Image (cartoon, rainbow over all chains, first blue to last red; front, top):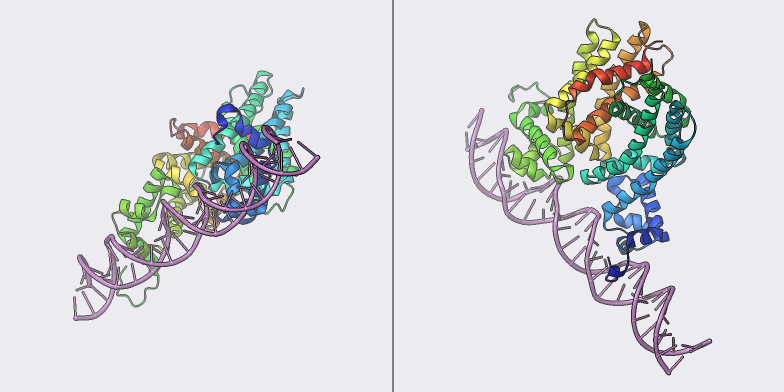
Amino acid sequence: MNSHSYFYFGVETMKKEKPKYRQIIDAAIIVIAENGYHQSQVSKIAKQAGVADGTIYLYFKNKEDILISVFDEKMEMFADRLKEIIEEPITASEKLFKMVENHFTVLSADRHLATVTQLELRQSNLALRLRINAVLKNYLVLLDTILKDGIANGEFDKDMDIRLARQMVFGTIDETTTTWVMNEYKYDLVALSPKVHQLLFNAIKAE
Amino acid sequence: MNSHSYFYFGVETMKKEKPKYRQIIDAAIIVIAENGYHQSQVSKIAKQAGVADGTIYLYFKNKEDILISVFDEKMEMFADRLKEIIEEPITASEKLFKMVENHFTVLSADRHLATVTQLELRQSNLALRLRINAVLKNYLVLLDTILKDGIANGEFDKDMDIRLARQMVFGTIDETTTTWVMNEYKYDLVALSPKVHQLLFNAIKAE
DNA sequence: AGAAATAGATTGAATAGCCATTCATATTTT
DNA sequence: AAAATATGAATGGCTATTCAATCTATTTCT
């Protein structure tokens, strides 16, 4: 924070709009995906981004702040798309399908990102993971909305426990994706969407 | 065990039976659960175990070796119990229920262990995670056995994808447990077993 | 316009803190 | 008294972060 900050609000936002902010985040994803979390020194990220080590600290408070920002920036994508899906005039079951498919599609399209979110970012410290959880929460709240809608219109079992159903849906999507990354993307993740949806829908559909 | 035997070769095993070996492992679980992975210096573990820093290195090759041993010692109990369950003359659905219940029961009974396995150990490096995966694999193979048995006797849907069903079951159990740990154990995890089983069984049961 | 001053951005070598591991020495057991 | 165990201060490697110096863009002055 510089000495002129008395006169500004939204300094963070300003920084986020400068090209170097994204440049560093994109570099971090590549470096972490290729070298692993523990071999991703700040100097390596700086080199990949084409800036000096010190420049990193003009845009991020510290190393952890880079990682939180990676998650913030990319998770927004999932939540935004999910919001659109929820608005569509389709059944709750179809919304659930589209949610699974979107999740798989986004990560299939960016394997670096998939590796970072499923494997590397998870070896960060607890504080960072709690922060990541806060970001995830937005996503999960939207999932709850789909589940509640489905109950309201009789598609889903009215007696199901929404919290557990949410954990099942998210746990299944997450485990499926992680397994795909660990198997080095050697099969088509998006193609699994119908079967995954079928399992999840069976679990919660009304009798 | 007797160090004078000319015929004994298992040096590792000998160390594992000395009291200090377990003492150090138990200390590691406590220290990691209470301080977090990154704040668990060897010196802290030594202090908790009541030994000198250097003593650690008489029983473990290095710090990572302590963590691998924690996992080896404590996680094999899941697979062992699951093997017993599979032998029992009960339905596949009941086996699935007992698997969920056993998982929740073991971790509920030792919150330090739950914290370490669900949160802290996941921030380890690649070598350790590969090792953890090898242990987990045994567990998942046994889960596959339950699923195959259930298909064979007509309880489970014969068209289900076993690999996906396995990922759903494990993903759900894991996510449920992690959420419970992150919520600081403030509800009864074991009590959720019937509902979790119901969701999973719905997903895979024969029509 | 061109020069000069000011503010803003970037650099990267130096620093400073951290901590796993070692090993000479001491203690305990056989 | 020899062997086996245990000790813990010292070492050495590592890297996130800092900051004085430099470069660039913008504004003010003549």
